[in-house]
Amino acid sequence: MPSDNSHTQFDLFRDCLSGYLVQRAAAGPAKSSQKRRAKGRRSNVRLVKHEAEVNGSEPNYAEELGDFVDYVASEIFDWFPEALRSLSYSAVHNDRRLAERYGDPIPSATLELLLTTISPSVADSLEAYGLLESQADLPKFLTAIIQEYVNAATAPPPIWSTTRTSACEICERDWIPLSYHHLVPKQVHAKVIKRGWHEEWRLNSVAWLCRACHSFVHRIASNEELAKDYWSVARLMEREDVIAWAKWVGRVRWRAR
Image 1 (tube, rainbow, N blue to C red):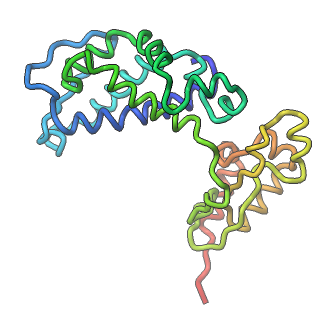
Image 2 (image 1 turned 180 degrees about the vertical axis):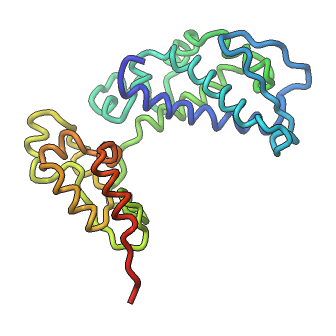
């Protein structure tokens, strides 16, 4: 997976795929015939799919199913073209042809091309473990999953005022008033656009922080540093000083009057 974004998008695709596989596995085998050995580099993954085992009599069932989801997701995703592996709202927003190729619905020509790149081991494995009645069902099965992935990957950013959380996104205290922190400070928006650090649609993204954490964030980095390097809560939480702060301030509590 050549691009950094493709790692995140793999997680997204795997999540879309897992919803379908878990649902089918919980329902039991698609056909009653005994499963045969599946081809592929992870053919030793053993899946037990009976209802009673899903309900708990097979201790390793969840782990085995998780391994199988990882295997199938990798077998499919690794064969996607780079444009699909790194698909995002930003990508389709700036490339009309890409938006047409991966729209809703995805054009049949695009789907046909994608399906021809899928390793035969995918259909073989899914059929062997009773998750497909026959390999002929694979195109229909994958079309739904690929469409769900494309829709999720290209979804526009939320209206930031609707992202309010119930707890501070740094210290996780949920009983204290929150304010919104502009992850890309407004004072440097013009510079951000001029230097190409972010696209315009990202400028108003916010994090919901308590006053103490909000002030702390602005003490540890300048507006330019926040905009360029710490434009998400995840990036802020990679800093050791932020982790230490969150652990400490999270224990600071007072009684209501």
